[in-house]
Length: 450
Image 1 (cartoon, rainbow, N blue to C red):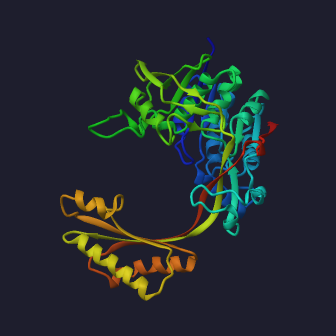
Image 2: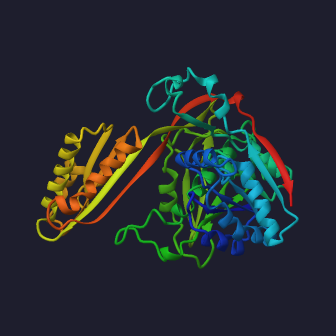
Image 3: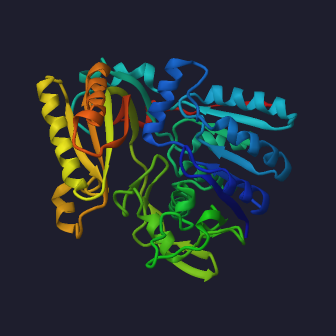
């Protein structure tokens, strides 16, 4: 039975490169995916593109491709990645330029576009925004971008044109894996609903790279994973009947077990019986994992129930400015001194009549994760050090800056022993979501040979 080997080379925009190199050199792969987009990173890409029309792709694209391109050529591993982000065309041009510098030829690079709906936002003015219930037209003055989650169809088309590298913009995370499997096995949702369910599961397990090999599983003394400093990324051995084995390169760090697979299966899927992706509505409720060897787990049981009639679209918009200030306090009575410092800052903001949309004051090392409603009940001893963290949301940069500056004045105007002051201001590009009709979206594929 035909078997395809697919590895994961990245699970987020800034992931490390060494495990990907290990997979490409030792994993005997047919494909490797690099999943480098979150909803916010698309907005960051759009922000970069607005500042410079030649940018907007993953900020580590060149760094990664410098390592990857020689291995694509040497080991004949096909790369599928969404590192094109908000500007896949420029990403392809950058890769071509780098290949010329490296003296690499004989590769075909495919660019998949069609996800950017930014010039069509007026068409969806009456659409309801998922996060706030507003009509999209109510946000028209702050909108900057719109990228729809496409499925695997563009990737499949690119692979049918014998692409060695497929560079996409916003596609669903599982689509990076579904594309190669549909291309290799000819699966369709109508004829192969069970295999397509397995394809979605395969993509979901690979999308976060090191999470399924133990990176997000380790809890010392409770759930332990060997050699996390050498964590190996996962690879799948996928059979034509849809069954597959999750494993990793022998000798690499990390762990593949039934439990690491289970944890990743329920990661960010909302409803295990109806995980909505552009390619299929997957049902993971009867998924079964079976350990068949060391770091080898067989997966089966995923199915599908049709596909969505609409596609989720990420809308990027100019939200606010964040101002933050920090100050550390240590030694006896440090929490009370930090608490007094927080009260001083809050009073000063009122005296200054700062127009703040939101203010948060917390104490790192004491309640910054859970706030006082929970932390006060869990604390068992007075901390020996604490870091005051003051953050504000404001409509303009000047207000955010004044708030951050005021925290710094605690150096000489606040309680005793403050130190390590730090402050910064950042404009925030946020995201929200609408749903658009599937028929409004069409993948476009262009190939370049180098």
